Length: 137
Image (cartoon, rainbow, N blue to C red; front, side, top):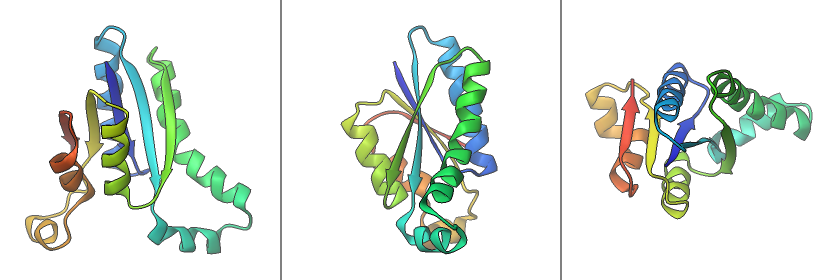
């Protein structure tokens, strides 16, 4: 079974990752994939704050590494995938193309009005992927 967890460095993403690791521990032959999407709209800001492309890459890796390490400590092998673009679109495309069996994603915790006006990555992804999705709050 292919389990993917989409992360963004937030607390909700860490809770989602913990849940995905727990699932992988209990399912025989489960493969865990940690997905991180670099949002183009934030890339300019990150580049301004970074002094080099290497430091930008390091900052991105710092969001993924703790999850991979947590999985390793739990006895679960985790691969990581870095994508670039609009988070919801890239996650949907990747999950559907890679035939992921289960996606775990964190909720940003938007209130009902904000979600109605802005939408959320988890809500958009949930509507368009071809596999079961667990949204962790």
